[in-house]
Image (tube, rainbow, N blue to C red):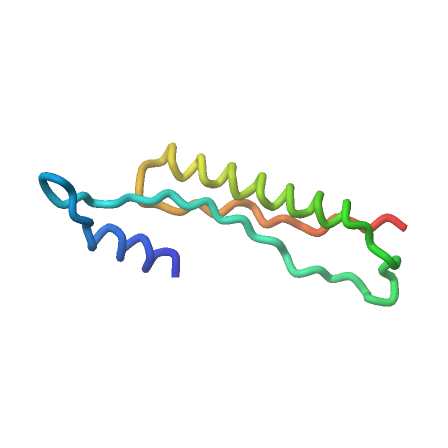
Length: 90
């Protein structure tokens, strides 16, 4: 899907003042592995700080991937390493 988006943007220039402008996009993709926790062993309640930390980690990975895509040239995507769920502390 991302490759189709890049191709669509590349192939559909927008109107500029003097001439059409070709668009280029850099995309950093963060991926979170599905958890494998046994629901019976998850402490309740799970703190919001846990989910906040996981979200920050995922965003950090996507951000690093974005900057790598930019360094490697326009109109490309870079996928970060998959983020693993951290152990939930009781």
